Length: 305
Image 1 (tube, rainbow, N blue to C red):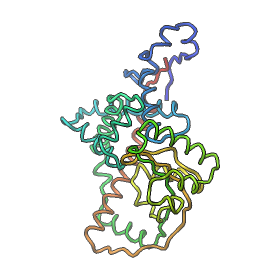
Image 2: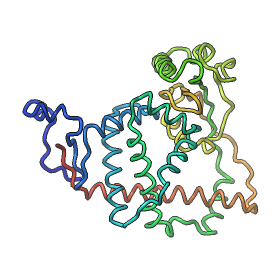
Image 3: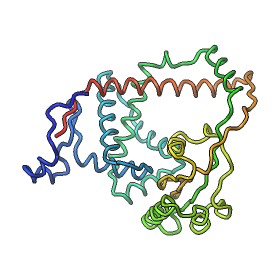
Image 4: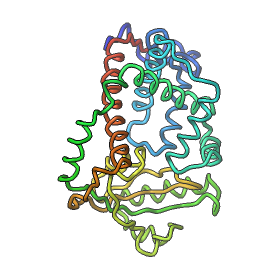
């Protein structure tokens, strides 16, 4: 990655106070595309609403840089989204997280997130899906021999089973702002070592509250992708930041991970083979896409302003 003519933000603040205070002043240039301070602030709010933790500014800048490169790749290949694609993408985004469109709008309004911020986030993902599919679909599509090999491996591979516990808070009881604030307080207590079971019994409105919030064990592969990513970043005993769920928010604790014996697989069932084909394709296309994205970022001219 080539960083050309970096200009320190501190220097900007000292030498150009008006520019430094302007939220729409450029913060980064990615080739010929601008990322403003407003863009960064808005992305921070969005990823925080989605349950991200750690250095949120660093993560926001990384995501925005990747998004600009993705858009530029789509433009170079003359790929455009059909009318209504972004709206459908937002609906898919909500559904994959167990949310309704009203839930998403409430989350945006509560955190003062511009609708365009979500639109841009979804648009880059949809365009990138088309870019990667166009370039790598043929290479990523599994053959029948690939399926046979994968089925044989799966039939002899133990399953990773997760036991989780939850504290589920509906927005209907207190309203979203108060519920989000309560969730943050509970998260800080749980992350600080407080008894999660006691917190679940006191605050959770799920039917699991009476058993300390503990859910039935579930195979890791059965979790929705976005949710699985958050949970598998945890070690047993750790908790997620508040995550959006349908009509509310939840804090999840990873109780344990164990290996279960392999499950019998009917490899003659066409539905089983098709499900496996889709999973292998998704894994391969994601891998190809990640490699291509890193290649594009490595070739990009990135200027810090």
